[in-house]
Structure formats: structure tokens, C-alpha cells
Picture 1 (cartoon, rainbow, N blue to C red):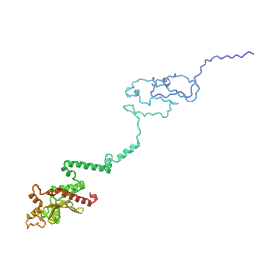
Picture 2 (cartoon, helix red, strand yellow; picture 1 turned 30 degrees about the vertical axis):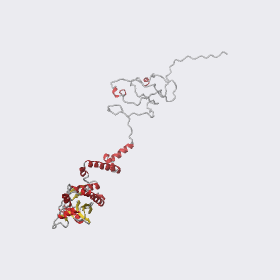
Picture 3 (cartoon, helix red, strand yellow; picture 1 turned 45 degrees about the vertical axis):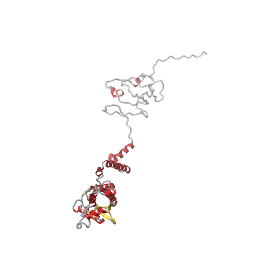
Picture 4 (cartoon, one colour; picture 1 turned 135 degrees about the vertical axis):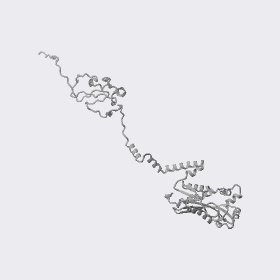
Length: 379
């Protein structure tokens, strides 16, 4: 038996149609789009009619290019280098994105907001979301009245109020130390208005300082009132009578309104010990609106008996006011007898304390008593 001989059939030259994949290869364009005159395959270097090299095995993904495309750009009349991004609208970061189909979207890809029409520039910036906590804070601030609400809140703080009061007091102290004459102007005002029944500065200034020290602010003025007793009263009863008469005379003349707070001062001499005379000041405060009447006395200043005797000798026996005192005051006698002594303030020669200081001390105590008796809402 002869061996079987096999021969290879001759190669057929019949051309078969190229096998095409059921899912065509697609590529998502890179951030920089090629010109419209070139196809996607040609832009990446693939022949337009290159067939698939194997049977279809499901969706096929094209391989990413080695780098960004460098060809396929067109230079037209609309090219404007001044707008950035090669004269085109801004795109996503320069990273090619590929998907299985032309309409596919890669998860997590950054989206770009459309450029508003008519905008002068194509450059856009990401908008940060607003923090709701900050919005609530500004809403609460605005609800409080803005700057006015801030000051109202600060004014109600006890610590801030204390600091402001101390600062105010320090500034006022500095001003009054440099210029003592500014004190009446700085502390004048407030709800307390006091009329002193004398126009002598030694009385008005002492009472003003005392009440401003206790109440903080007070308006104190003076108006001369008549005592209708002897110029030099003798005894406590005469001193009280003279101080009260000064208040009543001003009311009778209509020089103050019926509810005016008044303070009256009247000095008198009294023999507190056998052949020992003392000068004392009587202070009366009247507040008809609150039904308050207070009395106080200054410290006693010793007066040598010989000066009292001289004042008695200069007073006629038929003096019509002899029941209340003497016609000549102790100050007048001392002014005639001792050089460089004033009839209005001779106390400092015998005690080292001025009459103003004595009235101030008594008036300060009077102001303290008055403040305690005032209703709290009136202070």
C-alpha cells in the first residue's frame, strides 16, 4: 500500500469582508478638542479602515495616549490668545477621560460650570459653599441692631460699666487737679437741683462740693435770702430761726418754685461752758416734694471771751433785735482787732480749718442723710 500523500490546498485569493467588532472603539476627547476636520481615530494616529484583530469579547476600551495631543488644532479668525486656554473656554484639568461609550460619564469627574453669556472673561473660579454657622452668627448680630445693639449689650455689662466709671472718675480727677475751677462745670447737672439761701461763695461752693461728692452730679446755685434776725445770732434757737427765715423769705418773694430743694446756713455763737463761747453753723435742708426736712451743725470753733464782750458793748441796749443776738458780728470784731484777718473766714486763724471746710463736712453728712431718705427711684 502506498502511503497517502497530502498536499496543501492553494491559498484562496478571495477577499473576505473585514470582521468588525459589535462595539466600536470609541475615545473621549482630551481636554483640548481637535479641529472639526479630523476624525477621532486619525487624531490619535489610527488608520481609518483598520480592522479589528480578534473576535469580539465584550466592550472594548481604547488605550490612553502617551501624552496630550499636539496636532489637530485650527487657527481661525476667532482665535484670541488674550482670553487664555488657547482662545477657548476653560476646560477640566488636562487629563484625558475615557469611557465605554460616547455618552458615558466617568464617576468622580469634575464638572465645569457653563460660562455666562456676555461675560468679559472665560475664566471661572470654584464657588465655596457658605458655612451655615457663619450665616447664623451674622443673622443674630443683625437682629441685635448692629453697632447699636453692640453698645446696648456692652452698656449692660457690669464689668464694663465699672471700668467706664473708674475711667471717667480718673479723667475728672485729673482735670479738677490741673484746674480746680472746672469741677463745678464737670459735675453740674443730673436730677438734683439745690438752691442755697446765700450768694456767698464760701457757702455755695462748700455745699456744691458736698452734694456732688455724695450724688455724683448736682446743680447747686445761690440766692441771697434774709434772716430777719440779728446779724450775730446767739443760741441754738436763734441759729435755727435765722436759717429757716432765709428759706421762707425766698419762698415769699417767689424766687424759687414751691417744690425747690433748699439748703440754708446760719452761724451763731453759744456759751456751751461757763464763760466759754463757741461759733457753730446750723444747716437746714428742705425738700417739700418728698416731705423731708433735715438739720445738722458744723463743728464748734472756740471764740475768746474778750471778743464776745466787745461785740456786746457795740450793741445798743435798745436794739430791736436784741432778743435774737448782737448787732455786730464776731468776724467784724476780729477783723478790727487782729491784723490780716477776714470777717468772712476767721476760723482758720484759731483752728487751722477754714469755714468752708467746716460747712463742707456738715453739708456732706447732710447730703448722706438726705440720700438715705430719698425714694430709690428718685436717686
